[in-house]
Amino acid sequence: MKQVANFSLLTKLFATIMLTAAISYGQKASAQQVITIQQAVENTLKNNLQIKQAEFSAALSDETLRQSKYALYPSLNGSASYNKNFGRSIDPSTNQYITEQFSSANGSISAGADLFQGFQKINVIKQNKILLDADKTNIEKIKNDLILSVVTGYMQILYNRDLLAASEEQLKVAQQTSNREQALLDAGNKTLADVSQAKSQVAVAELNVTNAQNNLSISYLTLNQLMEMPANSKFEVQVPLVSDAKIAQDSYDASAIYTTALNTFPDIKLAALRTAAAEKEIDIAKGNYSPRLSIGGGFGSNYSSGRQIITSASPNGTRVIGKTGTTNEDVVVPDFSYTYATQNFNNQLKDNFNQFVGLSLSIPIFNGFAARSSVRKAKINYQNIQVQESLAKNNLSKVISQAVLDLRAAESRYASTQNAFNAQKDAYYVVEQRYNVGLVNSLDYSTALTNRNKAEIDMIQAKYDLIFRAKVIDYYLGRQITF
Image (tube, rainbow, N blue to C red; front, side):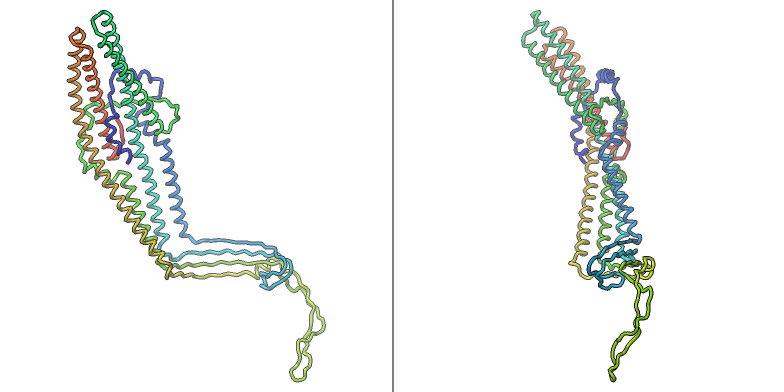
């Protein structure tokens, strides 16, 4: 996962949060919306377009599953046609050639059903159920990844915001020091080198403020984009109130976390579902080896304006039909004159009504090894996805082990930075007292101040890093990330 891959970079992202700076910054932001980490997560899950796309994919899979179930039902189809014939044509009702202009119509209804198809339709239904579950799990995976991204972005804002406050405070101290050095130079108690050193510290502090402002703007933009809010949205984030006693108070075991994550982590569940779907694809492909038995039936009728019926007959003498073999006399029969009319529509439909029913059996004998090839491809794909599932589990085990080690390292680093800050604070106090009475030059004073500020930044940075590392463990345990 991309978020997990960036864990090692987060240590450099979390920095100082000074209580006085946080209070003043909160007063400036009182007119703006203040969101908590929970609200940021809720906004992201509600507005993020990646989630909406995943939900659409799940809806399509649901419709595919529904359609595969409908495929078990018999098919029923109807057809109708109307034709206008000119010249020499075959009358569809008499199947004779005629040269008259006529109209014809026919209609039919047919039904069919597969009685046996190598259980392919059943296996397709089972596979589509698995794929639907996979798409639903993918939604949870995307949400899970976004939550970690929001937490990362949220804490980056805290870091950049507090770094800006600290940089502004250092700039103020540097300017005061510069003004004091200039005044002492005018009084003849300082050298030009001391003033130049003080001005150099001011320039460095101004650059730090500019960089901090730019980084803060970028971090706000990043979180704003995750929440899919308008570009001109203005908001502030709430500082989490976490005491030292609550930071990483649990004793975590990598094996236990991994066992829990195997049952709750969406990435593993998704990989397992994809493996199951690939296995079912083998059964579907094997269905091509089986014979197929189908049943069908239907009925229909037709009409032609060229079909004639006799309406009346009148005697018309006799007509010769042949001669006798011995006497060569004419053989005559009565002759009649007939009157014809077009048979009406209803009678034609009744007379031409037809029905059929039948069974169809298809036995695959040789089809260019297409069935065998499809089965082999399905097996190879299944083996490949099995490997992907194993890789997902191995990767999860590695990142959890790394996360536990990072947490322990963060605990040690936080304790060390606390000790270092206390030592630098005491050293700065001594140098400040000596500087005020002229026993220490400006370079030594500036160095002591810089060391103290850096130690304080490192300490609070370590505290935020420790908080984040603990929340990463909660992430793998499937817990809600709160402060």
